[in-house]
Image (cartoon, one colour):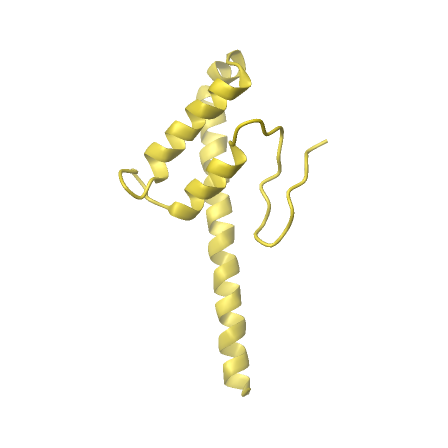
Length: 102
């Protein structure tokens, strides 16, 4: 493999990682905004209804069909992190495992 091919491959991997990082940042921004704007309401709710409300808002924002800012990767991150029965989970960087927050 030539040096040019190696560089092209490395840049493609870096691009993929940057896109994944942007998706994680966008999901984080969504959650921070939701907590900032709706924190009192969310704290007053039971866990599952609060997660369902956030999932609905995430779908309204990021759904490919009818979202305000369609983004399948961000929606997937939020759907996973707001899934049923999950505790305080750390959203993993692609290729890593999920760990529970202490």
